[in-house]
Length: 118
Image (cartoon, rainbow, N blue to C red; front, side):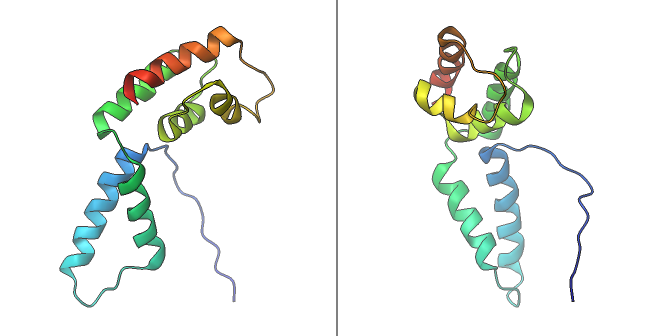
């Protein structure tokens, strides 16, 4: 038997926003003693707790600043916020699948914004 699920909606989230959502889920599950937390959920909570360094408002501001740069689209902005690349090579890895490359100045502009939040 195969169960198919349909994607009804999709939105990008930063780790900080995800952390808030998962904290609510974790609290809800803790109140229901009969409901165990699935392994995947526990790992997701552990991941966001470990790697989320910003608060949700700050992470949203970070995304907005990145979106003001011409060659940063929404999916890429969220990748940058979630991965916090430290140098040009790490940032180039995020852009590796794009059909264009960024100049040194463009990379530095993005890294300057990252430095403000990292």
